[in-house]
Length: 177
Image (cartoon, rainbow, N blue to C red; front, side):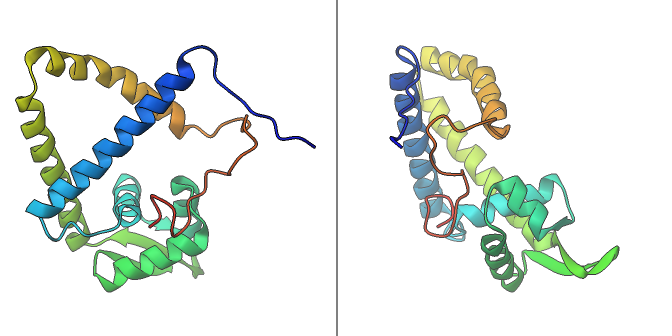
């Protein structure tokens, strides 16, 4: 059976490619510039995302985190173990089912997340201030559409048009490190 190649209509393919490139470059330059100012910002992005997910809703079971982050449960277990060793999360038996562990942020984990977000806000504020007023207005105007795009991407797709990957990220992938 031949692979089906799905392409968006018109210029959407070019727009998607340009957006992916800009987002990738923005994430990379933001993380590298932050790391030069804040050497502790050496947490892999997958660990940061796990901490962020816990701040949104905790305690959480490994399986819940795997589903929310679209990672394999064994990947989440490994990340949780690393974060437990760094004292950023705790893993305790679930009171409802003692065979299952729940994970929650420690005060140190919450403080690390607050520092991480403050560093990113400070860096982005500085960069935005260096842009001209027209570029600042363009960025500001794009934010609602970008937020809607994030929400759309957060919803699980009904079917994958490309027949490609499942969307799960494992260790060694860009976000899984």
